[in-house]
Length: 127
Image (tube, rainbow, N blue to C red; front, side, top):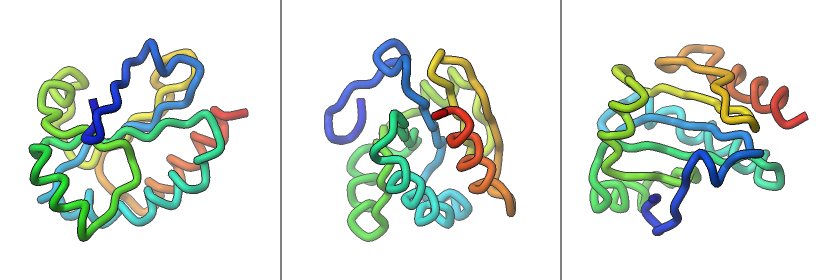
């Protein structure tokens, strides 16, 4: 459930491309990439692409952070259990799941090509 109360499940998102971002407020690379990630959300807003941001911080802290640093993903606070379920140990981590619920892309950290690779993967999967 995201911070606005919307529920998500793999089953309900079947047939859509799902872009997952695992992050937390104190992670400098996580915060640095937000403006570029917001551009992806805008670019694919008319497509069957869902952007979910799993933050380890609590809801109040996330809401306060978002007042000064908008992040247009559907942000899910208190995501420690999901982080553990996906075996995430480094941040940011990006996972892209295809329309058949199969992981198609995974990257850890913020490298010089990370955002370009995310965009290229989305492009391939929406065709």
